[in-house]
Image (cartoon, rainbow, N blue to C red; front, side):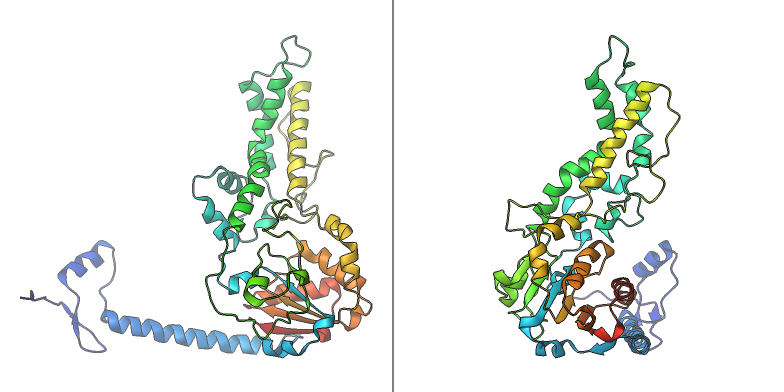
Length: 389
């Protein structure tokens, strides 16, 4: 036999009785006001509000699009391009739209909360949200904090004066390495941990949103490390250039990092690290700071994406793109760290001023990046057409 339930309130919309004594105690304990609607009506109201907001945002976006100097097209129109003279440039947005959990927050979560690499990154990278633009964030190491501990480690390791008979070079270098320990951890652990994570990535959606957009016989440059162009869409492997590495190739490193010089935003000394030090108490302390500084310089070199070296090594591949007439950019953030590659594509082209650029966008925030990208690279608005993915 069902137990009778005493309801305390009546819904102002549907008139149904709801709200038990237990629920009132819960609301009271949380300092919440008593509801006026039952749960079903509250859910309906939330759904109506969400729909209104979406319609409002859609109308505002359509109004905003009319102010842009770029023509808007449907992605299906891209299928008409000539595959022999077209280049597709693929970024991480491609993997994301196929359900691949490949953003850097996923990388963070893959390490767990008590991981040495994650702790070093989150404690010593001076960015409010380092995972939002992880590669660029690597340039913002808190080297001042590490340099500030040099004298403490000098005392802990009892580093003697260099002219003392008991001076130990091992203690000296141990103090320098310990002071810069977080940087050492990042250099040692990041490549291994990053590859391990990348090798776990798989699509979680069976749909093919670009089935009628990709021209399989075109040339592809992908900034992803995954082979999903091949496995999902059947693009021939010989048509795909994995410019930052292919996870299937164990002998080659996966390339990531910040733009050259991005770590030196404030005044630097000759050793390449920030020139803010505590007062140096003696020559040994000075030399120890110098040694720690060189360790930090090695960090910045290690985390720099050496796009210039890649361009030089693959000069012939870039030259082979000289007759490209159409460039289709899908899922690429257009981050300045990758501008050198785009500049090289343009510089090698025999008729760059007439190249047609189709650039994908997903949210309104992309337009500022697209505008900055095209202005920086000298691409005229009439050369550009945008499509939504």
